[in-house]
Length: 324
Length: 151
Image (cartoon, rainbow over all chains, first blue to last red; front, side, top):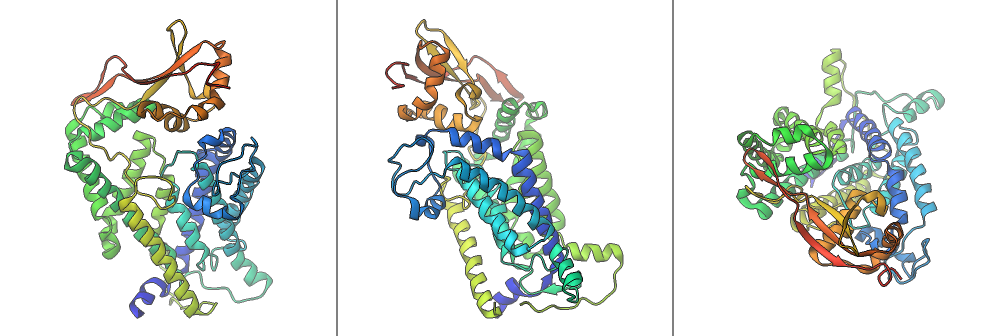
């Protein structure tokens, strides 16, 4: 138990947590509001017939008290006991709250409250969007991360809250380079979550495609498919290099199957993190699969405080801060 | 919140999140357990000659002409059309009730002359040196008329 508490809840750099908070919140807002155009998707979903509505399990659970019958725009009844469909106005209102909460979370104003609101609206909106028979993978990890940030001292430093505490209330500011209990919990949780996501991908390839998955033709197929579908001339051009692609496929399997090693042996991150970033950037450039949220989440593998100290040649002592 | 209580609460949260992701990530290939999901993207093995699984939807008119239909005409995004219309036609699980909501619009556009929907692939196969372009092949169809199926 002591080892468990020490690993998950022992003192870790507050600055690392704060930088991750900023990056994750801004990346989520960029991805949802600007890149995927949440509002356009919401409008499209609200026009779809009830027969398209197939809510996710947690979405149904949230609405359990309201699940008897239907109260949406078409007036149809009979979606069943668990299938409350929220009205368009409610969804659009949540969207604007989502944006405001995201900005407040990014700058660290009323941090834990803002993060809680950001998480709830993000979770609700994305669950709603994915309740029509279509689901994709970029957002799940980020939703979990924001939930975890809500439960941490994410606004203790590098935040509007810390400025308010020191200037307005006269409280001595927390050293931006200090450690604190619970500051590492969201970061470590998401590191292991990444390992599990990659293991899931590795396992799926083994069970669906078998070892034949690594035959070169598989990735050529997806390069051609997505190249034609989304207009990536580069993907079509690369698809002609069978042997190079074959090596790439073997590399992907090794990367995904062994990624967990860099959590156990942190020095391996010098290898895995650049490879991972290259992989996800390439996936976007070639296959147009936008895993920007994962790229942003890779910030959890970077020791920001230590990097800054190294850059700034800071030689002061790192004080410990108790939690409240 | 006292440290001990916070520690227990967060321990439950950590164990719950990682356990759910581990179990669902390795056993479940649907989407309804989001945000806990598996990651089987690009998981199917392909071979030389595999046909690219990209599709077009066409309306069949009463004079046997086939007219391509776009997402915009049906008021859907690419993936909604793919998963709720195209894939069910291919898999023979098409739900005519769900079609009524968007079918009315295209019936009006074609003066009520639609007698069916057909799905074609794009006629491309994967070969060692890249894509090989051939003729599209029909991969699914349903009969559907504007007067009976859209009431």
